[in-house]
Image (cartoon, rainbow, N blue to C red; front, top):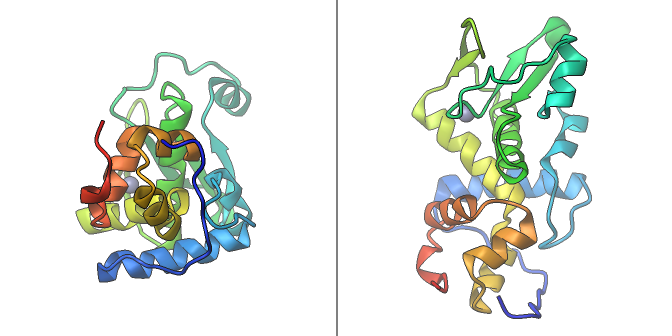
Length: 195
Ligand SMILES: [Zn+2]
């Protein structure tokens, strides 16, 4: 990525209708959180506006919550789940074995399910709870999470200034895979400077 990227406020939106609608929702939430144009946004802050009591994402947090260690109880392919606990409050559980950038995306994704009021079928297993959403719901949650983390209009400008996926990931505190996914679903993939 070039050393200096210049950003100017603009209200460009994705051309794909579903992505455009989701972008507007995510932008409103970013604004409410006080995240300025092109600034990174920590999705953990969304807890203020949703009926979420707690987010568990580190081993220390799990140990404090359950009063015991849960080390070794998480399968790698499990990323996270939102459980409805008492009084309509939710508990977001994230795989503590995953990297910070991956957990950040999973948290944004789980808030996506809450924003769209998706109802999952929660399957209690011996180990981690499994939640099942349909593909359409998963796409919505994914798109919302990515829009909160990687807003479209500044992304467009960053790409025009020849940023790499790595540079974008570093700036926003997300994985390169998340950046690539975002570019693919918003039709910006072709603009990426490939290394
Ligand atoms: Zn999901």
